[in-house]
Each structure stands twice: as C-alpha cells, then as structure tokens.
Image 1 (tube, rainbow, N blue to C red):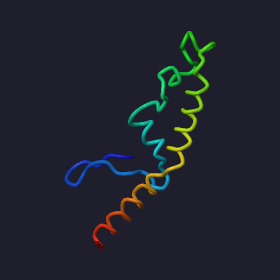
Image 2 (tube, rainbow, N blue to C red):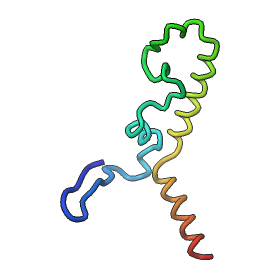
Image 3 (spheres, rainbow, N blue to C red):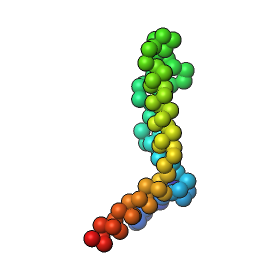
Length: 91
C-alpha cells in the first residue's frame, strides 16, 4: 500500500487485489494469527513446550489457519462482494 495526500487522498494498493492474500493483510494489521500466544514466537518460549500435551493440536490448528487465510486473495473477496451486490440490486 501507499498513501496519497490531499483531496481524494488516502491509501491505495501497490499491487493488484489478486496479489494480496488475506493472511498477508491480517498479519500486517493484527500480528500473529497463532491460536495460543506461545506459537507466535520463535523459538517457542513456553517452559512447558517440551511436555505440553496439547501443543501438537495447537500447532496443527495454526497450520490450518495459515493455510486457509493464505489461500484466499483480496481479489476473491472483492469479486464475491460485487456478485452479492449485483444480486441484491437485481431483486
């Protein structure tokens, strides 16, 4: 993104919407998408990580979250919303 000053100013995309993943946007705006805080840092700082019964579950969930948000682009979201608006106007 880049900023434009003055009237009609604001933020503009530096790339096409299809070139941004939702994951990329969320990580910039929200930070880590880790479901538990200990996974948001490398190496994992939790003193229980070596024997944590649920750590592998959280790691798997984190991987699924990353895979999903990285598989959807901003362009896809915009296209879906445009389709919804067109359908709504046609009613």
